[in-house]
Length: 245
Ligand code: PGA
Image (cartoon, rainbow, N blue to C red; front, side):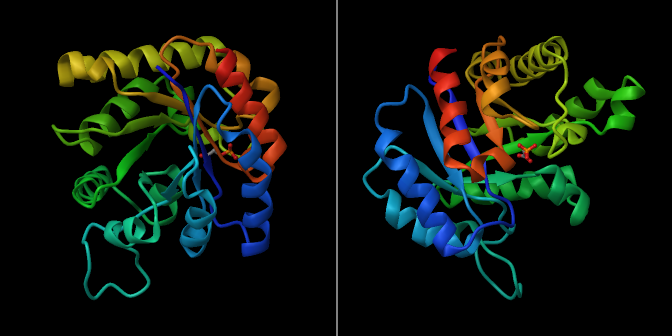
């Protein structure tokens, strides 16, 4: 299966910066042996989608509301993301779970709505450092998967240990492999054969220098990249590692 390398720009990026990053990626996009996805802030989705039209690089949002429209000041719906040119959306990122008290039940509702609107969700799961130190990582991630995914789930999972996000720290390769094997087993248990085909990305301080080792691990189907996706060269370096994996 082709790996998916998804860039999560978070709350970063001006129109000029987006233009620079996208134009730097374009010459290489067709020749990469992986799928590329850019998830800019909502204000830049239209502009990035326009630049990427006709290319192999996808565009996604970073969150959406549970409703498709209505009186929800400041929120953005899955239908609006789709209308702006997105075909993917990141849901349940740990920063949203922490900053906006998002629960598994809320993430589940967003997954359902996003699918209805024609978006493919990337559902994020991952334990905090305290939970890992307590040996609770499987229980935490297992509960997030059980609570956040609908029975007809057609998206992608991203395993992102909270303590590895934006810190420069990554779990050992053994720990990543163990967690991806656990997630795979949970998905197969719940979805049968289909669960074997759901891509599971790794996220948390992925950069060009560690991507090859992480992407080569069994059941790692790609990467969700934060900081390193804001530098085109670094992001391309990760994509090239995916090609080699
Ligand atoms: P990072 O972020 O690559 O900057 O650690 C990953 C993420 O939050 O998706």
